[in-house]
Amino acid sequence: MWLGYIEEYPDYMTQEMSLSELQDNLKDIFNELTSENIPCGRKNFKSYQVTNE
Image (cartoon, rainbow, N blue to C red; front, side, top):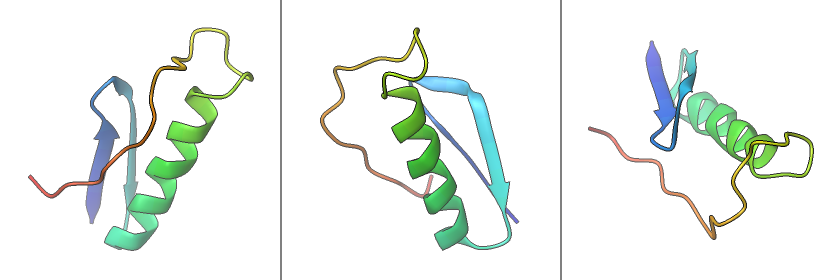
């Protein structure tokens, strides 16, 4: 089981059975939060990186 979140958005945690599925979920969350669909999303991100810590 893999758990993950985006540092700038720690309230949006996700979990998956594989790392690749987790990365896909985190990308989806990031894209949604930085889009025009959510009024409080940030727009100053240029990229992101998934890390194992």
